[in-house]
Image (cartoon, rainbow, N blue to C red; front, side, top):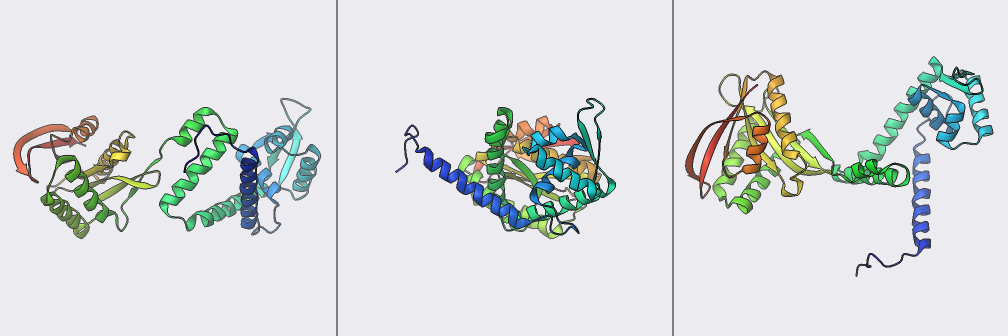
Length: 321
């Protein structure tokens, strides 16, 4: 049974979980040891200092101490070691002669670059075994931790907002498009099996005749889950592209997924050298028609027809690229 939201929590339980996570994270980061490939290895603290020096290019030692929460004496010894290794130069600040300005030397920049490469490799190792959905969950949780414990409310709202990502199709995506088109149109508009047959033919023709110069499919993901799709295909007439099978899952509507899919389709067609883009839809698809209009498409023809078990009004739309 769920615990009511207003039931008092035992603070010791929260502290235990926080400390447990902290031990786990520290051990995980230490196990990566991303400075191990350098000729002269860096400790974790030294790597943090090098990262800050590279990120900010020039910084006062006092600001560095505050940013990294380091003891002044310890930082001074660390910087002296960097200076002995010819990684940094130290000079008086032009703005305040009491302050010490620190900059990386060419050798220091080389070391910082190697540290960054190692850090990227280590991060990639952490993420490589995760599925797309699990990776999105992990990164969302990490943003939330960072914001709740150290950043402002605007960042917090951004961390809680759904994350939209577009990518090109991978194996399995085309089958998913057939399934979701058939299921959604049956549920929302009462379309029969003939619509699934049409979508299957469109997808099969796309896969069989695919040419990356002229054809492209995008999959939209919302927080790591497939949430929409669209195709750009050759129409058969010279210089004409056709937009096909725009789909947005109900759970993803209202987040701009459809707009981003259509915009990507139009941009690709324009860059590929098409002169115009066309599409066919039905008048009952109000949301889709709104997206097409905002993208600049114009209605050029419409006619009544009986298809997919329904009486419909088909519409032809056109966009000059």
